[in-house]
Image (cartoon, rainbow, N blue to C red):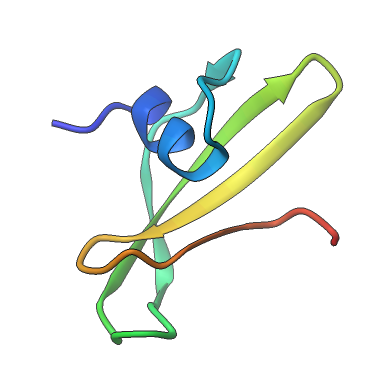
Length: 66
């Protein structure tokens, strides 16, 4: 079973300081049309990020302004 910390690590590339419970993102994956889940986490003391990950393919994104 995937934990919030492991899901955040999959998207971020490193383990976060803290992570909230995993939730349904209420939208479909833009690549395959399947369900997307989300997790909120803190990669650092001053930043909070919401990450999105498709449950069926490799698509992932976050809400950072790029």
